Length: 555
Image 1 (cartoon, rainbow, N blue to C red):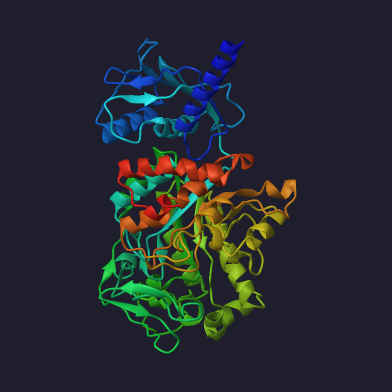
Image 2: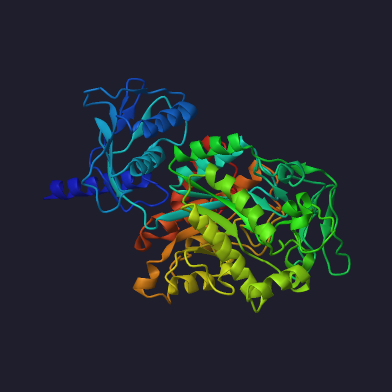
């Protein structure tokens, strides 16, 4: 009897050890560790077996292992080997979710079954997290069976390239970060007051003029809430107070844009990682860069517009498009080129922070309202969005807009992206519209990670625990309404983010938390366990050369 008890305790102990090795983010639906102490060892003789159209995932795995472990595996679609193989296969029995996969590893082989190409790729991301976090000549994978599929269909991450421009190489790297976390949508914020970043061949001045500004604001926009924020601005340290708050710019020209060929290159890169890119073309506000290039589309005749150098908005300056047939034709031409480039079903048209005061003061806008039977500027906002939507729908596409597109009445087929809390998303679902939850106070990663932050950031802190504990489905929704919560998204606005290292710093590890709330079953979320798994993830980030805050290692 003692021997049996000892044996059972030994098995339990071994199981515990193996369980500690399997630290995956986002947490899979099911993980079962094997009883065997033997591990699957990847060496120079290991083959990847995969037939077309599965080669994409095989190539990704091959490339990853070669890049980070200096080991190039052979892809052999015709191999009949049963041992020392990594086998990738699509099978139809996995019908619970089209993105479901099953990963089974023992000492002889590792196999990934999936119900789709997407699912297979997600399985590859999990396999990567089973690899050692340090370079090794012996890559060992524990004995494990994992069954997994995502909770939400929309798992998105945003990047603003208007405030600060990032080159194609970094955009690809950013997409790789999303792929590692099983995200499937990249919201590319391409236009705003501070720079127009996409080539439009019909209107070359958009990039000749609109892609460049003559300086950027130094420090935070002075005003309520910023009175006692202390931060470092070279060459001196500045403390903003109500008395000495002065707007200053650095006088350094900043800009850049993506050619249509570069856009195609990025789209293709993302597609191979099963990530859909949603482009955003802002309207009717956040249009200073556009107006600098084509001032005739503004609400003030003969005004000389300039690409914005400061981060102010709303009533701070006039950045809204004139409501006119000329403007609509211009935007339709722009969107035609954008929709021809991007295969995405969805086009983001902004719609946020449109100050109505400029329409109210414009004779042309007031005449347009009267001619179209519009009684208020809110109705004009709705008219603008609906008219654009009708055009986008005519091209077989669907619009997404920030929650302000609800003002004056929601366009018939629009998807609402709710950033001002959850109210907009909740209202949209009650009107049977899809909603994407991205509340600023929870998942805006340009906010500080800590209450006392070492670097200049926007807004109050968005703590890692707050991100992780956020639930995208509001409690007030019933089961039928909850079905319209398409998913969630994190946003990264770059007012104070000027380089790739700071993008990484702001992104990690909050992207890990976001990925888990969007992918993993709600009942499996466990913050202390997540923090434990993060310690392994940080080692992987060290391997990949990713910048993150070391303060997380102290707690």
